Length: 314
Image (cartoon, rainbow, N blue to C red):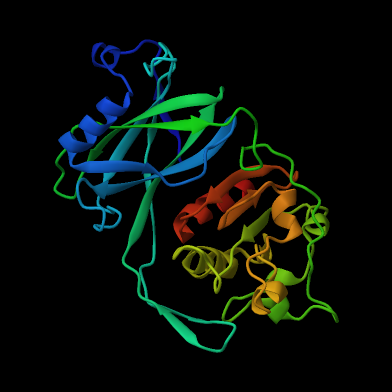
């Protein structure tokens, strides 16, 4: 599991010189040869999983770097973008990758769309944010040659409220459409092939069974990024094969498929608003008490999801 390595009481002498101004961040990118990006939405107060991506400096077409390993030091920043003394914590970075195989999606018009994406990787950590505002990240990483790069800096916003993705949030008793005489699998899932077993029970009813629940808001055929299809195929489906029976798996299409197929455009389903979501994909791991263990936004893989499932089963 993604654990904090240590929490420092006082900033070190090198950290006393740290600042997260735009100039300092840009200089760190140039020195290291890497650009850091936040790969998830702004987190909220509480413990959340956040991920970052790296690209080669000066080459925006280079794609994501997937050969890094290391840690991230997180700081709360003051109004001058300086670290607040005593706020530093360090976390190991877990590399999470998707798009490692060719996949074939059948779209609503009957055409086949072949994805042959390169490896796309982000680096994730679980961070406990006690305050909203601007925070700083200092990445200390090595590349595939075991060369330690100069520190890479990034600042990012933390929202001033708890979000559904924060650990311990209470899951809404959502009654989303499920398979019945009125709803065919085609109206509920754009996956090819779809898994009817993920559309048999409402979220509300699943919470009454005393089992962990995996709720995925993913659209394989109408994804707005190249990552949503592979999330279902490469992360969720392997874990369904391993844990079905012990864990309930629910798939919710983020968009109204009937309206989308009729040409009306992308309209979010009511469940998205109920969960406070405006983007996809999202995968939520929910414990037996109906509380969120983790919300995985964007890129997650089978190994990462399996770790969180194992945690709620034990």
